[in-house]
Image (cartoon, rainbow, N blue to C red; front, side, top):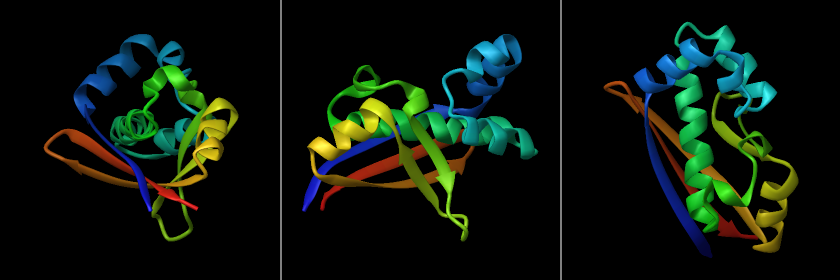
Length: 123
């Protein structure tokens, strides 16, 4: 059963500017796994933009926005096959447990934009 859907789109150039301007202060919004992944990639800002879009999309799907949890409590990680997956902790994980749901995420990058869709499914 479908419980929620969230969609978000983020400008990669904007993320690149914020990362360049604020460095570590900007990265504090990302989980360690996301930072490591972005630093290994030639297009690291694209990876961070996708991660941010996924956080926002999850907040929309849960109905809490980013006020319901810390952005660092949501980590966009990759499965062995490269597929994206959300790893939640803290209040973000508790929100999902209360809804008795599982979160599915899909990402797309094109024309300097990163888009994420999160679907909540009852478990």
